[in-house]
Amino acid sequence: MEKQFHRDFGELDTIFEFVARFLADAGIEDPPVFEVQLIIEELFTNLVKYNLGQHDIGIRLQKVADALEIVLTDEDVEPFDITLEPEPNTRQPLEARRAGGLGLHLVRQMADEVKYDYSGRRGTITVRKKLVRPERGARS
Amino acid sequence: MFDIQMKDGVLLVSGRLDASQAERAERMLEHVRQSAVADLEKLEYISSAGISVLVRTQQRLMASGHTLKLVNAQPRVRDVFHYASLEEIFGLE
Image (cartoon, rainbow over all chains, first blue to last red; front, side, top):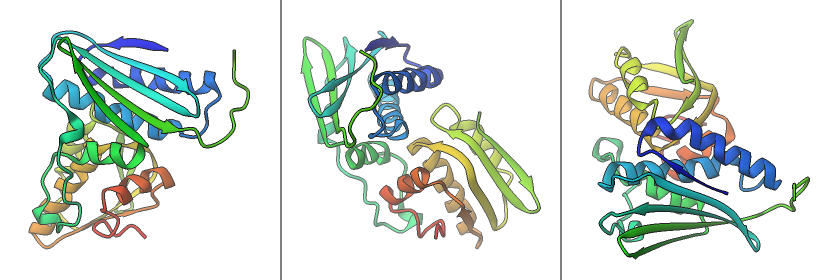
């Protein structure tokens, strides 16, 4: 299932509905909808904030073998490889902590694999999250 | 819809605290000037944008000798604080 979304935080509710509907239709209970929504919010808002693109952002969800695959595509942008971004120091005392980097840290914590590809001015982020429980009630 | 209500001296936090609600949440929390307890029982979702709002609030309060304590977080919300290594800082038990 794939859909394009405007580069606007106001799209988040629509994205959350898109995620919930896909997981329900696919009969996927684990990873839970909370984690998938969070991974996608962090990646989507990162693209909106830091990629100076003009086009809508594509989000594709699909089952691949024993995993849920989440793919975000951003057309006509400069390269921004999120896998090279440094980890924030979450052991620092609160007063020394700065905003930034936490979202990608959460994605790395929750995902099993995060990949970045850049080709033809298109940035593609692919996240894999293993399916934990057997699927039930999946629609064909 | 994200919301914060004050009841019996406790901040009752509810709904979803995502990037689209972060500015609104920050404006609501600007009114907190002393030590406070926030009950997260009805907070359904939080992302890094929401966490950052709470971190900035805690930093501001701590600078004046106060603290924000969080209680009753749902397991998935609590997981996010755990991944961010923020449970202890907010007194999450």
